Structures are given as C-alpha cells and as structure tokens.
Image (cartoon, rainbow, N blue to C red; front, side, top):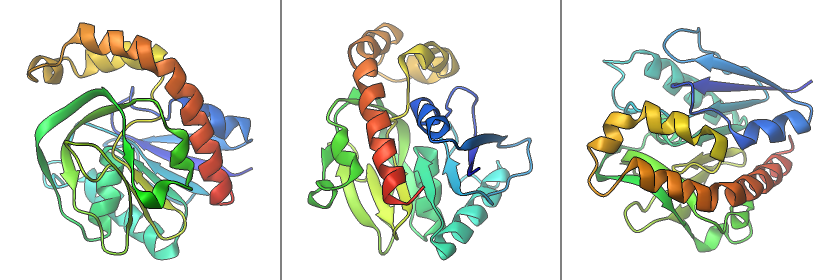
Length: 228
C-alpha cells in the first residue's frame, strides 16, 4: 500500500477533500504534527500543509528547519511532493527562493488566473473560487514553472521538476471545516480590514461545495500525472 505523509501545523488545516481522494485510491494517510512529532518524509508522497507561521521563522520555530531539509531532499530526488500555503512557501525556500511578507493579507474566496503553462495541467479543473489565507509570498524558485496568480499575489502556483507542486491557495478546504478556520484564525480575521466572520461564512456557502468537486478532480488528475 502506498503511503502519504502530511505534515500538519494546525489541526484544522488538513488534507480536506484531498484525503478522500487518497483513500479512494487505496493509499494510507499518516499525519505528522509539526512541533511535536519527529518529522519524516520517507513516503510515496509528502504533503506540507498550511499554517500561521512564516517559512523564514525557523529561529522561533525550529521544526521549520526540519521541513526545509525534508523538502530539499525530496527536490533532489524528484520525489512526489505537494505544498499548500505555508507548504508551498517552504518548498520555494528549500529551492533557494526568498519568502517574505506580501504587504497585505489575502484572505477570502477568489478565483485564480492560470498562466499559459497551466492550461493543459490538472489546475485547469479549478474554475471556481478557491480559499486564500496568507500574508506571505515567495519569489519563483529558479527552474520553476509559474502556473497561477491573483491580482494581490503573482505566485499562486508553481511546479518544480516533474513531481513537485506548490499551491499558495487552498483547493482542499471543505465547507464542513470552515467553522474551525473561523475559530482558529479569529484574531487574524478581527485584525484584517474588510474581512469578517459572517462574510467568510457566507462566501463558503456559495463556493465550497463546487470547490470540493473540482478540488477532487484536480487532485485525481495530478496524482495520475505523477504516477501515484
């Protein structure tokens, strides 16, 4: 049985609808909790999930150094790896790119604009708004293929090699999980002008169910592409 390791930073930012895809394909999913578990990346697929810390904060959060090391090893081996939000930033940093504050928070539901290089990739399945929740961004790593952008944030998706993908946005989030996000990020929501719990809840009701369908389709296609 193929195994997937997902490194999780906060409990509610998990694999979401992607986990259903993995289990449907007969894969075993194992979560490792950053900051408490011994981190390892020796699986058929490594997923670095999102979280509220910065990829550049390894002095304050030493486990980030372990994640960067795992990502560097996977990149050197061209071993399958997916990064979501913080995870994408960690992959970019592991590839030598700069991760830095965006200058403003990008929080809420919104579409992504696919680059020409993404037109024939699994990302083409994502035509509905996705969930954005970040205050940092990254420079495109050397050798990476730019795949998607939004007006506030150019680097929303990239690929490195044949089997590594970084997504700044959340295509995995499920409607049933949004209350945990609203609770877990309550302080950030309150401190971000123009963002409200009610607005995020309403927009989730509008978009999440369709994203779950498209997100699963995207992820199935990507796993096919990398032969998993």
